[in-house]
Image 1 (spheres, one colour):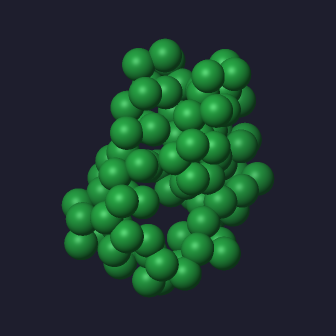
Image 2: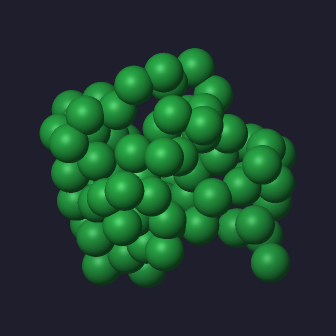
Length: 85
């Protein structure tokens, strides 16, 4: 995940949506990747927006204090559309 996100950023993609609907587990390494990616794209006037986290992943993010760090959307379409306005 980290390498893929870095590749996207190096190719100029700074408005990213990460659909977490198929993510059943997220470790602290995954959380660190999300935070570092968010910081990197925000430094370039972008953003990382998340959508569809499972209850388990949302709970891990809550316990890690990250629900206030990310904008989380109920659908991928909503997350993408949020960049337009």
